[in-house]
Amino acid sequence: MNELPLFRALQAEPERPPPDLPYIRKSLHWTLRLMRDAQILPWSESETAHWEDFFPQLSAYLPSEEAEALNAQFRSEIVRLRAARW
Image (cartoon, rainbow, N blue to C red):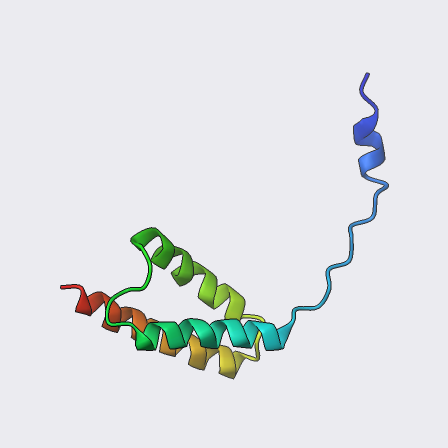
C-alpha cells in the first residue's frame, strides 16, 4: 500500500507573496507602448491570443478603475492592429 497520499494532506500550502504592483504596471505599460508603436500586430496569432487572455488577468491585480482603463486601451490597440493587417 502506498502511504504517500496520507502525508500530502499534512503539508502546508506555501504562502504566496503579494503581487508586485509596480512590476505589473511596468509590464502592462510596456506592452501597450509596444502596441502603440507597432504598425501591425507585433505577435503571431497564438501569441496575440495569449496576450488577449493574459493582459486582463494581470491587470486584475490593480485597482479596478486603473485596470478598466488599461484594458480599454489594450482592446483599442488590438482592434487597430487587427484592422491594419487587411
